[in-house]
Length: 368
Image: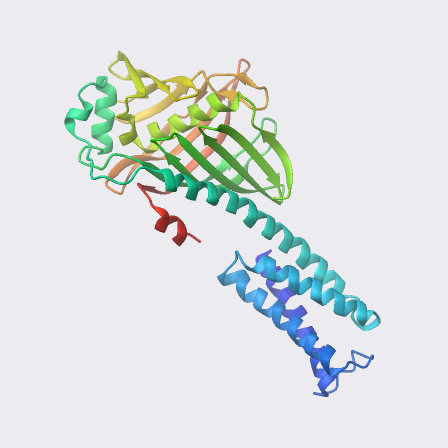
């Protein structure tokens, strides 16, 4: 699609230069039968240049090209109306450019709402202190939890204020095919916050989604082509659901954050423990399962709502393929599974692409 759009923009832009050439008498431009004044010829040149610049931005500053592309296509269409008999077929190119540019602009605006929330969360994130996790911090934990934190390598590392995680993976709805997605999220521990933005293509149509979890509420918004809401949920059920998801993220990808007075641990046996996590607005619990290496291998909670049924069902996230990253041992692959009464249903597969801890505003601003 990007290659096709590039060709359309370049060819459409070059054709506009013909209007400039006709007005100033450069060569034989027989394709345009109507006389063109020099001021109008300059407009043809400007619009053609805007289309070419839009092509360049599409590859080097993709967040800017849709807005310039919309301006260029609208300007082009005005000229086409003035010279309809000769230029009417250019309308097809303008329609394609306008559709794709509008979708691109809508995605950028939607994603900017996510990044604005991230920046606000950064503003209230506690200032960094060089507080390190010690063996003493682990002393009151159940044995398998302590063994897990030792295995992941949190001892001697800074305490976790926030974490940025990037995934690639696949998702699906019940009865539907898998679709690929990429996601970027930020979790903040002091004031529990989870901001998760996803991009995907479903049946070939660009689709974006934003899960927003903060003390003032939890919501999920999915938009087709970043324009048309196809799922919007912000009821009270979302808060415990997103609290489970937030806590799940900490357990799997930010184990250093599990040293927290808001988490009450209950020993079960040498390979499992139950955790109860309490925020200002919710209390949820989960059971964590470990292997003999000290790796966390599964997380199960009964407090998460399935948004399609708006009922709670057991929810689990088995994980595997631990890798070394930033001095930690963390899982690189996980699945999200609903345990419905009739059958288990795996709806998500997550491949860890990158992770960063205690990021600041400069990290956000440097992201494309």
